[in-house]
Image 1 (cartoon, helix red, strand yellow):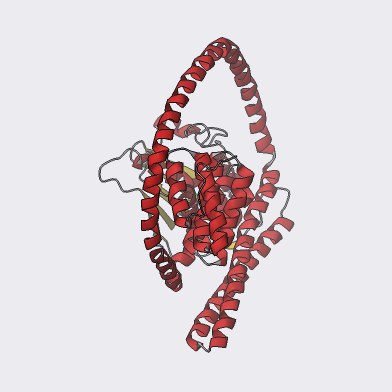
Image 2 (tube, helix red, strand yellow; image 1 turned 60 degrees about the horizontal axis):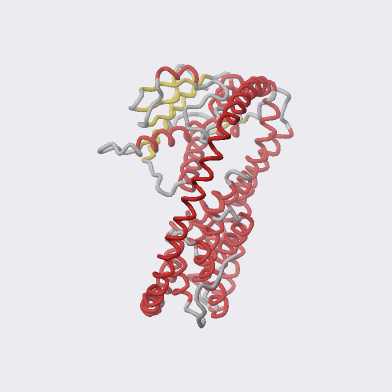
Length: 463
């Protein structure tokens, strides 16, 4: 629960926003939550949707930090809904990315849904047609500058009062923390021996379970594919839903512009509707192909194979992996280079399975360059190169990075189930193992690795 620190008349929404942000920066989440909720009330009263989006988004972040996940998701979805309603695409990108992060460890389907929604909104933000929307938002912000100046003066006066209260609260909290830490330290020492014995027993059981899971993975390739189909089919369906919603909005705009007699705008909007309809048709056919692949799936555990453009497939999953990383980590960036052999004919593969392999290997490349970038190497530019070629009657896909590389002592282990060089919680150790089985057992190909620690790694997929 939150409490009103000071009784006052209705403040301006921007004063509530500034005050809430300062309390959030200071770690006082209850007071920040109060001002965000107060801001929502004021924006609803004065019908200020732009400010409303900011309040819903900030309130969702506060509730996420307070572990109130249901409320967090509710207010984040309200922010997303308002962003879509008023076409605040920059906010739609941020909020959908936030929802994808919230669902990342609890609901993979929803995480993918919001990640795709973020990608679609981001593409619209970057398009020329969305320039007008950005200018409108900028104009709204300028109108609030005067109100912000007035809010600044009122806020400074209020902070003088808060300063004394905060200082006193700080000393009380420090005293309580020292006392609690001392009590917890005593309890921790008394439980240390028992914890050690339990951990040793758990480790023994974990090793036994790990061995059983490895055997189960070898016998359950069919089950893995069937479980993966749900995730694969969700991707094109998300595109169909997103573009359908956009077309509904465009149709309403088309009617409005037609009534106004704006012929040029009518033509432009009609063109957008036609383009979105083509995308809906494309992704609908893609979903249909996945369903057919599931129905025709044999007992060998492999998906339906079909003539596939390897260049197009690799390019699609390169973009998917990059946007996925950007959704999880806004600071991540890398130079992407492609070297396609445009003379390659289509080859007979299961595109969903090969796509899963590409996604895993490309994600590993992004992880490697991101880790090296954290080392602050002078002049370092994270780069991932993906190339296709035909050699010795086979099609090769090469994925190369200039990241941290793989130590030679573990190179022979990277395709083993449950082996990972990543820190605990960042890798399952199954990705490369499953990729190896898909390439070698499912397609009769080869998956090789060439690496030098500190300089980079190259994975070679031969089909």
